[in-house]
Image (tube, rainbow, N blue to C red):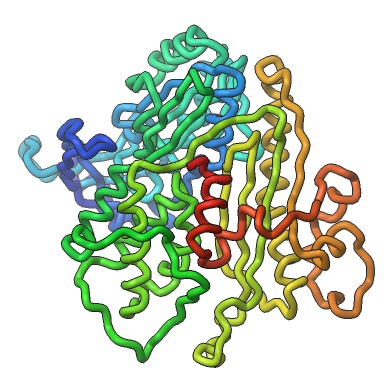
Length: 498
């Protein structure tokens, strides 16, 4: 505490108490928490904070490591840093008012922050830099000698151990339990942390490892229950659906259409569904993305589409991803595009309706690790161009992923002795296939921007093979359009295992 008269013209921020009931993924009470926060909204840019960005690990990295943990029988555990942010020193001079309920000496005093409090603008960034610097320093400097990944900054490697960081939660993958135990014991000399012993509650996802069948299942039944409960009676008494989207139905703005009938919070549900689709339920990705586009002004047709997704989830609450790693399968990528699928007489005045949709999924050792469904940013003039743009877009994720697998093999070669990397990309459009594998001047494709040709060198060098595939076997088809129940269930089984 310092006297207010000594801080000159410096501004102070308020102190805020936050009280929370922290729940387990199943909704049961874990503990009560009381936390003192600083009012970051009162900070001034350039005086008490600068950059605020802090990286978080990609889901593709988490699923890749879960796949490798089964193939190489790695020991897996998770740790949680207790009051993580205040374990780092604050990186600026910040004054805070005396918190409510705290006693101060007689006189006008304020707090000078020494530690990094929650809710400061730069709190997450300051914590990550503290964790990173401690991990990568050599042991004689008080660190642990980890190597930070060049592809994903939240992955750290060291002597048969991989540590993945998501803010204050970390996953540890080790050659044996003794490696992980030694690391945790050493970390406890620098940090206050607890070991969670398993990864079942990591990021709200239930992770079940079956050693007998060598499978890992990822599910979020309690998030789905929250979504259903948020809709209330509108969905609890409704019938279930076999698909999340109506066959070939494309949503549009419908500004003059009928208003919504229900009062549940549309955007809140979209947020939960987006997290669910990105984490464990790629089968709803296309349908969720369609609904998310109209969150600013949802109409009755968007409400009905969202209800259909939840009615589909109602019948598949306990389902998710089943990872069955196959060491001989390498890396595969399935790509699809829907050429100007939203264009019709009704939407011809909307320029977005002629944008094609890109969908792709990256498979690693037979396990899906990344899936995408999004509109293309530029207008394609033909099915060939739409498919080629989708193929090129998928390469922007595929190539860094290949580099990440190479990095893993180089850094931990003794841990992954049988990694054999080969990448195959499947495309069902012959024109796009020829354009990718036999580049030459064509009058009808000469206008395609150079930025979409960035991957050709790797194809010509044989690092990536682009092969044709029967449309019926293309897993990415479910990310570009609504499918009939039979086709959807077949592709879902091929992708998710159920």
